[in-house]
Length: 402
Image (tube, rainbow, N blue to C red; front, side):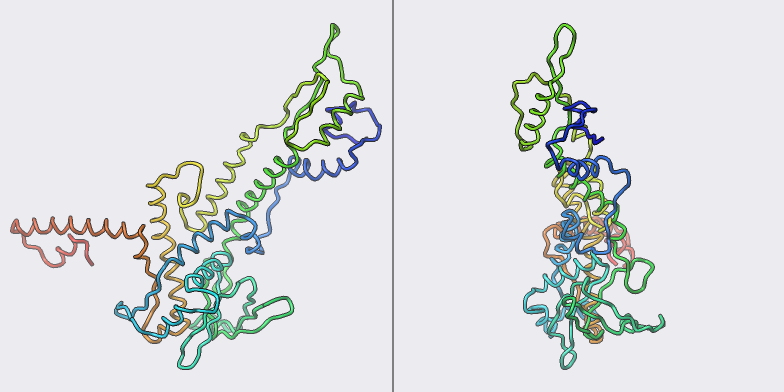
């Protein structure tokens, strides 16, 4: 005997007449059982991070925000004494790294790939005299690393790698030699090459985020309010049941209407809700908790993202400062160090460094630091005027100067 919750609501369980909703059995299986009757957890496949990046808005928002913050840096070429070098061929590369991207776009692409796969690659072939005039970020999910098989006594990362196979498409691939590459990797603490993507550790919050969207969509599109339409008629002997014809008429009307339409009937019926209030399902609270897990994994601060409550000007400002100081600036330096070493700048005694001094959020830090230095200098002058003799080391310590 076929039985589902609408049978119990609108007809006698023992009634065996053919139902008019021919496809309802499949609908019940797909929507009701999968959402409300699932007893085992369902985890997403983390083998394809880029697909998750395209599918899950929270993941994309966090990675894009981080990559944008890194790409806001300004490249500066310095020598071994820390002095800025004004003229060099690398500035031509920065001005036009490839036909379609600016330097900020290049850094953004490298940061996105590094955060998704813990590896980023760029095609940067050397021309005459060691000059590099082309720099093209490669999508990591289309790169196959071919190891040399050499042991770990190699002094250079590229000594462990022969080349890469770049897949333009399934039937179109090419080999790029290691000397034509810039390779950036974020260590996972175990593997020296091919580090495990941090997306692997985010399987559970990412799965829950997807489940939140699935459940909310089913609630909005298919389930609606769940309850019983029962008769409200009675006589001296008690409640009067609906006739079979009345039940079928109401059931047909219910099924044929859109989710935002109401039933208009001459029958005296009442609604008894059986569903759990949506707000008590804590769907949005769960989504927030999962998003925070992503924010922490990528080293950012929750207040730099949109949220319903808790965001003030003060904590957004502090969140931005923390993100830059703790994550963005160190990771930008890592990217620029790899570029400097692998395109040959360090052999010339030069290095590209990222500068963030132009950002207003960090300029305020600079102003506060300057004000603090002035206060310490005033205190030092008063000590000297009082006739207290200090050594140069003691003066530097008071001024907090190395």
